[in-house]
Amino acid sequence: VQDVTTGRSHGSRGDSESNRQWKEEILKILAEIQAPLSLLTLRLCNWALLKFLNCLFLNVQLHRGQLDMVLRASKAPGVPLVFLSTHKSPLDGLLLSFLLFSQGLGVPRVAVGSQACSSRLRALLRCLGGIFLPSRMGQMPSNQDEGLPGAVLAVYIEEVLRSQQPLLIFLEEPSVTQHLSAPAREWLALVYRAVRDGAVPDILMVPVGIAYDVAP
Image (cartoon, rainbow, N blue to C red; front, side, top):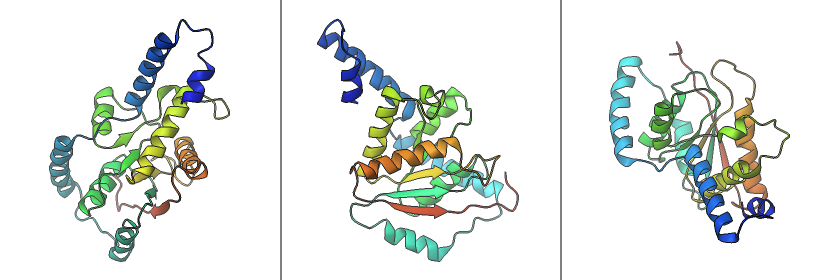
């Protein structure tokens, strides 16, 4: 982040004024990416989601053997978990977050794709652990310099992994299966960069399969 801001600060009106402007810009980008987890909102949504899932599904089945392996993996010292999941329904993020939270794995940071959502829903999802690509990154070609938004997002992902918060990445869009989506490529590149640059020594990548008899 400092490299990007230093390279663009030549000819500015003064160091203090330039630093203040860059700080405001960085905080604005961070506000687009994430929000502090709200424990009260998490508890309320955990209770409401349990009621909602009971009305929506006859049952939810977990593979006990695979769950035990994930629970053992979560205890590996200094190694963060990155869940890579198929994407069958807009409810997948809430359902998987609820299941992981209910099994004592903590609230995952869910990498949200490019689907459009209202500002209120976006604000709620950020409080529940959702993270979003900065708006300007979604409008850039993949081969273009991502500038300050890309630098801030890269550092943010490094901090998520370094603090061993589980990260959940959906590999496809709900309506298009069997193809790696553009947002998934962005998120995976950020995880790869964090390992390549030594932000974390290693990660455990956990494939997650999800299926419905009838997708909601």
